[in-house]
Image (tube, rainbow, N blue to C red; front, side, top):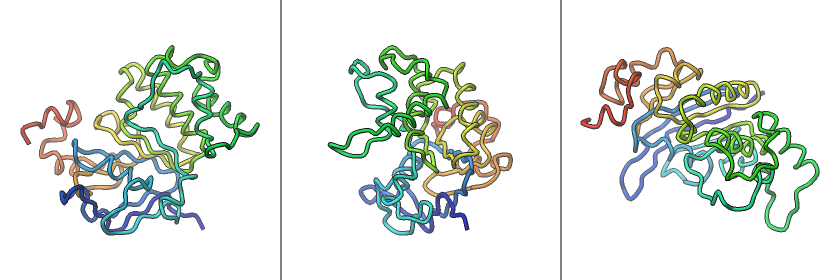
Length: 248
């Protein structure tokens, strides 16, 4: 019997007594490709941090493949919105990806770790750059390396928080093609503001703004999006929601 990749039941969370998530019931099945859409401050990144076990909900239950989040970290890969490391640090592409196999202090990487890291680079078509210093990569190339680092964990669930933030529009289509090839291997969760583009690539959409207004097939998400943004779907799909809707 297969387990759902993620189950959230009646989950609520507050920062300094300010409600961020309220009574969230959310299920992701194995090999789902789900986008989480919503305005800034709507709780999207907070939800990911709860899945990663970095935050504990005030109430409710969270299971990742049937486990508590902190006990399921070996099953989860994570691509953060912001990367905080010095690009001039003398580390090459292969060593960066190998970090995804980190086992703890004073524990060396094995030959298997190196094989898995190399395969991850092949999966994202970056093997030929394995000896290049990361400071010499473009934004799109760097994003592929970070995906490879997440894949090196051999996850069953991959979380991506605004992965398009550092990619120019010409590279975005290539990125989506890459991600689509991973669907048969794992469940994918993509947090994004790009409603129009995302809806063309994902299977399901979750509309989140403190509450979960909709979770289901992408093609049926219009009503949920209009409810959380208080704006017509035409404006949302063809603009930048958090700018277009500033007055709301």
